[in-house]
Length: 118
Image 1 (spheres, rainbow, N blue to C red):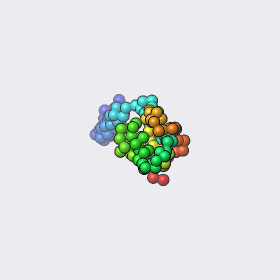
Image 2 (image 1 turned 45 degrees about the horizontal axis):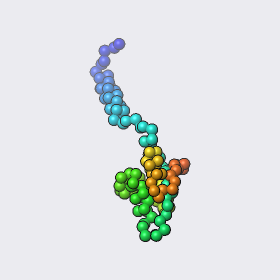
Image 3 (image 1 turned 90 degrees about the vertical axis):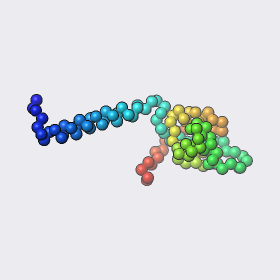
């Protein structure tokens, strides 16, 4: 093997830093466990007959029982209508949501959601 020349030293240093950066990035991102992938789910909910509560707030409150707060529910909600809402959830969150009183059905949406502003 040839001895590194002066011209090769910067290239070797950059290569070493790149490899080290990739190793750190790989170590920082833990592997996704089963049930932790995020998908778009649609929930069908029982509509309150009294008409007193805002339907959006009702949907956020139902979702908050799984996520811990109304603010967290608002952050993951894609669409909300009376009787239904769509939200980005993990499989485990969707499973727990399906057991919340007032939630009639939770299913994964098949249609792709644009994420690049289209």
